[in-house]
Length: 375
Image 1 (cartoon, rainbow, N blue to C red):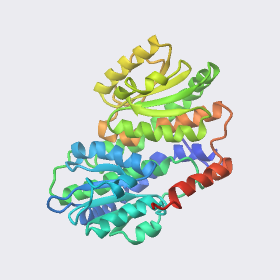
Image 2 (tube, rainbow, N blue to C red; image 1 turned 30 degrees about the horizontal axis):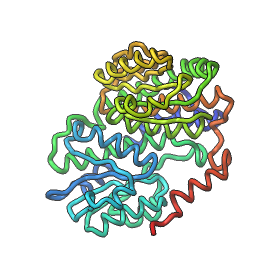
Image 3 (tube, rainbow, N blue to C red; image 1 turned 180 degrees about the vertical axis):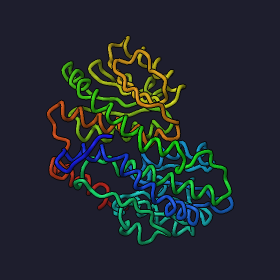
């Protein structure tokens, strides 16, 4: 297992501690499952949704994409703004929701939470401490309690914690509703992921990504495209959001099939296309994509977690084979390491907190998400 100390670069420490931090969070399974059982089981005809902004939205979509198959309970992952304004998603008293915000201070998420509360429904605040205003009005607070390595770093461990927290809440709700979950957060697959697969995957990334990134940058890097399907599409969006903060090049994300119909037409030969393949079917599709892009003179990096190779990829990260329902917890780690390695190899310091690295842009981001009111 990779070791971490406070003397190491902060972002790297945050990435490498994930297996241990998630194992500690899993120790609180009973608490999270009980909250889900009491507050997230929809009433007759009711729906279960999860909403948030940024990382919260990515996590909601990623877990929502596997929840029906894994837990026999459908969860719709939407943005806070969509949940707030959409008439088709107008909540009622039988509806339940998970409101996701690590600080509990994002205006739009607070307003979306208030909408379901006003309608007579219930929501659980998934946060990191007490949830501030969002937590104060919630029916219950599920707190990750993951300590900061440093404030305002590019999000890593807390994102993975949000995924696991949601999974435990949903499993509790599913069992209380008499559903038939096919998996369990307390099962051997989760234990293997946290104790072996994530640490081993991070070791592989540490050994291989610096050389790959040095070669990519040496040939010129005009941008990065991150492609995925299903839960991996949400994870691709998450990866792009991390990359764009530390890589001095444009970054985009897309669904792997839709890329061919849209973003491909603006792509350039000096870009790197990241292909996430967490199932055998997607690995086959990614192989076709890699071959087609090779004909266009483009470079690809495959992240393989299904045990099936992405043939034709320029570079491959072959990680331990992992069940598809756990992909939302595993795949963020190599994307985080890719962000870190690309930043370091390009001469950018990813360990500087965002408020200090670019204070003007950081302030604007805070104003955009926390101090704007709908008129």
